Amino acid sequence: MLLAFDIGNTSIHIGLWDADRLVDTWRIGVEREKLPDEYGVLILSLLEYSDIDPASITACIIGCDVPPLIPTFEQVCRKYFRVEPLLVGHGLRTGVRILYDNPRQLGADRIIDAVAASRLYGTPVIIVDFGTATVFDAVNEQGDYLGGAIAPGIGIASEALFSRAAMLYRVQLERPPAAIGKNTVHAMQSGILFGYVGLVEGLVARFKQELGGNPPVVATGGLASLVAAETDCIDIVNGDLTLIGLRLIYELNTDRD
Image (cartoon, rainbow, N blue to C red; front, side):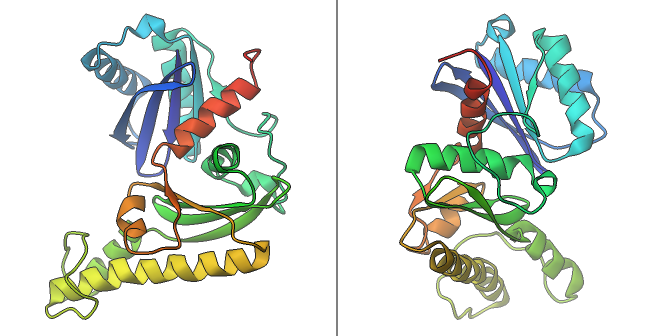
């Protein structure tokens, strides 16, 4: 079985694959000071809770946007699963030609998502990843990765609002009764949620104009479902998109058919 690690700035999404079947997934928080043994014991406990024998794991793949955590998880794979992990990066086959000015500036998750979306939904395709940042990516009809746009994530923007405005405070991120808030809580919820819906709709419209046609828009990330429920511009929500991309890249770079 293949253990896939999608390591972001805020959370780590872990998926266990048995061939093309996603057996289970877990999310844990990112703690950069945590040692390999601490992560290793935590992951073993998750596997034990799900009645999965660690010895059944025969391969690992890592997609990481936090460079200091790369050696940490490489050690986890070597020590706790006795495998040499595959690290998504330059020199690895992806099946996607990258037309970004400097490919080394690309986060691994952007390419991984492009690989998965292209395979699952065809090309051209637009991907919106609601993570620490809200990231938009575009793949053209030929299957080439063109680039995209990066905006502050909903969580980052909300925290900036709470911390910089003396009379505002943290609120639950959920749909308010109306766009015109009748109290401070609803007004903030409206500005955060509907404001981001407007941002997504605006950027997707510009992407479509530049790509031509009407490419599908795929959303992933923790808040994808919340935003997608408020707009018609998102066609598909797939919370496991990055894990699927990691599996596809692993298969491209091994002898497996």
